[in-house]
Image (cartoon, rainbow, N blue to C red; front, top):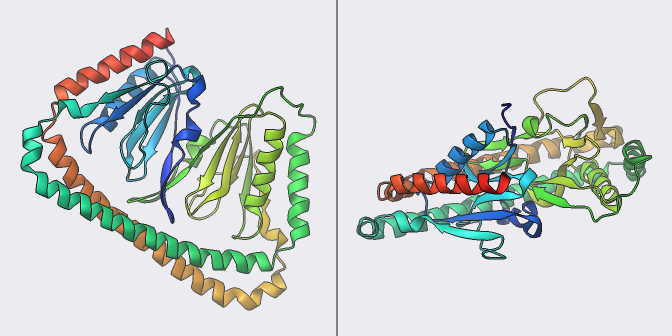
Length: 366
């Protein structure tokens, strides 16, 4: 049997405004067969269980979406069997998720039933201390990201002041005509799923662009400096696709959660990628269409602002790197919390629970 495919993305992210979650935009609750929500503390085995279930499902030829965690990019927050509208997700903080239609769609499995309470009570003071430290460090992370965003905004506004708006509009119209000419409107409301293709993590800025766009037939790759109209073009694409009833996966920017960075329109086999630092495609395919948005800049005038832009870039990235360094401190602290909980867990029981969840998923599929 042919193995299933895996695609990966981040359902939530560390942003200048704190932790931001798109969980509710990823899973179509009303259309779902089953949503299994796992509750429990750090280190209780949720991610390990999700990984084991994924391995079994992929071996059976099922395509899986893996939801990665920005607190640790190697850890998993969930899996989705999209073709069958089934999900297993981590419903603990910071992405608190509770059932919306208990019993008929979703259910809770509480891993807290399988830990040694007396052992945890002995570590009560240490747990409270580590939790407070994590909270304090996250405040620092988000303040660094907010400061970094403010400087990046300076750069964006500078470039935007030298961009020709008419050229941006013309570029958008050209792309819309190229993509949607002859595409008839579907008699349905478009479904827009929202997520992040890249994450701000303790390991730095991590992205899954190559994997996400590997099976897209035609890719439009946007490059160019901030403020050159990339997100404006992509917003026009999303609006046009929605008006034609086309379903989309829309990927947003962690540094500005209202800004669109990438789009996949599977019904057309088309994808749009913003390939700029810190999320760039590893390779360009022969049929990729490159769109250099720097072509809208009036370069002779821009030279006078180069020194300010360079200084702002250094400062903005320095603050960004400081946020990442602090995230690594968060991870070290969380790792200690996880050790406390994992040393007080009955993993023989949780392994059996994982097997029961797998059997339940397979029963919905067969």
